[in-house]
Image 1 (spheres, rainbow, N blue to C red):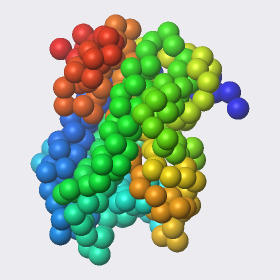
Image 2 (cartoon, rainbow, N blue to C red):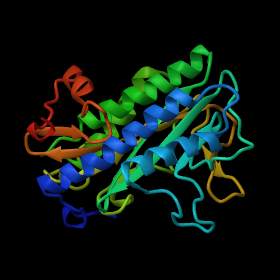
Image 3 (cartoon, rainbow, N blue to C red):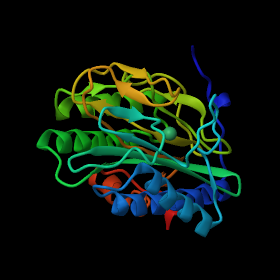
Amino acid sequence: MRRRRDDIQLKTPDQIRSMRRAGLVVAAGLAAMTDAAKPGVSTYELDQVARRVLAEAGAASSFLGYSGPPPFPGVICSSRNANVVHGIPSRDDVLADGDLISLDFGAIVDGWHGDAAVTVAVGAVSTDALALSDACRTALWDGIAAAQAGGRLTDISHAVQTSVQSSGPFGIVTGYGGHGIGTAMHMDPHILNHGKPGRGPQLVAGMALAIEPMITLGSAHTHQLPDNWTVETVDGSLAAHWEHTVAVLSDGLWVLTAEDGGRAELAARGVPISALAD
Ligand code: MG
């Protein structure tokens, strides 16, 4: 199936600025949850941290009540160890020393969405687990760096895959991927985390994309738990997941969910940050 550029929502600079406000709420929530993610803390408590950040900002949740059945009950997805994505926060899900947990958070400001995820090491984690999370985070930024106006959609996919493979023998989860984002959280196009470059729609100024690699220490195969949400590796291997929302602009990129707009990581890759970020 070929998706045309016409299917992808294009934003004006003012609309991108609104998305930045949503992105900063997401960044604040993820930072607060990262600080709070200690052994003995439940994922329900992390969800409460995120709810407070939304309330203080006057923002709405992108996740609460999403889709289903059953409608998603949290404002975050919390996916611990072998859980890859879409884990449901719960009082019974308590962090332990050595856990790796993906925290995924979305916010709506003035009708515009931001979506990002981090993987947090709880206490002292194994060297392998740290390498997994680092490789996933690096692949995210390498994918973002490939999202430049004039390129094509699968330049991102290829950059993510190449980056992961250069870091180690990790599994790349293929059943899930990134997405367009704007007046809804999940919009066209779907963004694979693997594939050949130079395919799919051309990237043009005004697009906003959520890029989100998911990788594992073992098999890339996953299944969904009976809760109809949680995605888990079939072999029980550890997973990592990192995500940012990035705006494609004519003079560079603006990573809307990064506190610094992406300035440091883009500079490290020789990619300009848009003047809109100033
Ligand atoms: Mg997403």
